[in-house]
Image (cartoon, rainbow, N blue to C red; front, side, top):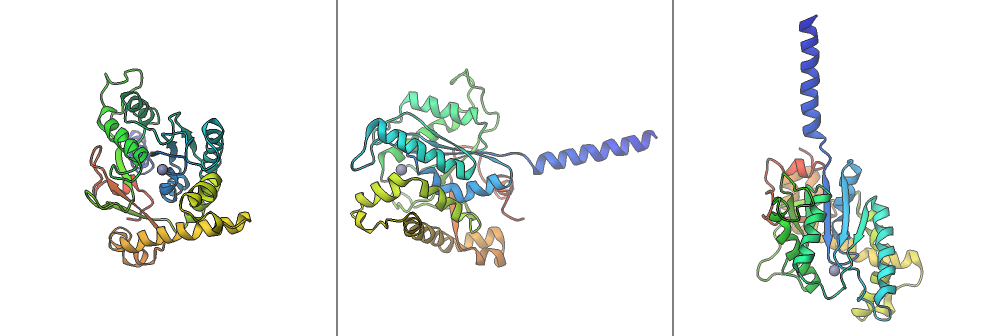
Length: 294
Ligand SMILES: [Zn+2]
């Protein structure tokens, strides 16, 4: 009887160990400068959510400047509502910090806010911009996140917020800037099954994708009038960008997914390890990206 009990206890213990190793709930914090920046990683974010993990989206500015006819509080409220809708499609909270758009500084006050955010969400992975980027708010956001990367483990910094015992993995999302160094992905994720959800999220940002950005690019007259037509017009560029990433980093996709699956992936997102937190490596990559097959 005792032996049977011990065997049963042993089975429970080993199942418990196996369960906790394979099913740890990951917390992914995506920190962009503007409402609509975090979406760039949301094909991957949707895969995390589908697998039962938690995602939170953050815009470090409130988006109150980027528009040709609106501004201030009115625009901030509109951007906030667009972000809320976008987050709801994903199934995640979308938080806007109250910093003016276009004027973000990597101040100590903002660094403290980012440290608390990363800690309070118990983040395992933090995704942000690289620091060589055309937009000053993107550069400041990147610096704020990287400046927080070690401090999240230091108890006497923001002592009211409990530290993270394990430093998160800090990743950069994709860009095409070449100086001083080009983007070099450490992980490429196939997003064929989630790209339309990602496009639905972008579609929530009406003030950006159908007003401000086309006006700023001098193509406002090209935006279709109907909702379905304008979504498709915007979606073409988004699908092309994700297809370009899959093709550009095809070798990486094949090394992660195997030849058969890696060759067939049409749309992808890519991430580079900043090397400022827990390092991504061959041993842990499938722990942090559990939807990549073994
Ligand atoms: Zn931006």
